[in-house]
Amino acid sequence: MRAARIVLLFFLVLFTSAGVAALVNPLPRPPTAGTRTATSTVQSRSTTTKLPEASAGTTEESVRPGPPGVEQIELEVPEGASEGEPKPTPLESERRVIVTVSSPEPGEVTLEGLGRVEPVDARTPAVFDLLTDRTGEFEVRFDPAGEGGPRGVGTLVVSD
Image (cartoon, rainbow, N blue to C red):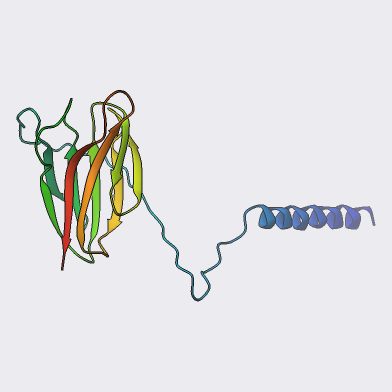
């Protein structure tokens, strides 16, 4: 009789803890009809890319191969005020693109017209994982945390 009570108490505690765990961390539900969801995934990888030397006031850019069907674009914020127009980067629509922007100084990188903002500093680049579902020109802007105003880093030109 005593063993039965111990077993009953064990199962009672087991089911109670399972119920609490289900309430604290519920399973994700699929979206209902008529709603749109968007997710963004940032992948971290350790790669070294040799970029061409750039003259003062220009933007360094590198396009490197990534996973199949994914185009990777690297932009670098030049030190100090930049002169001239940022270089355009042509892209095809309906493609996945990972844009990485590095900077020697802290601040924020904005993709104008796409509503995306990411922090950046000397050790952590801003990474944008995008689906080019709209055509147009989208300026990549850097807004330093310290002195100085926002400046253009590049332009993403998405066409059919």
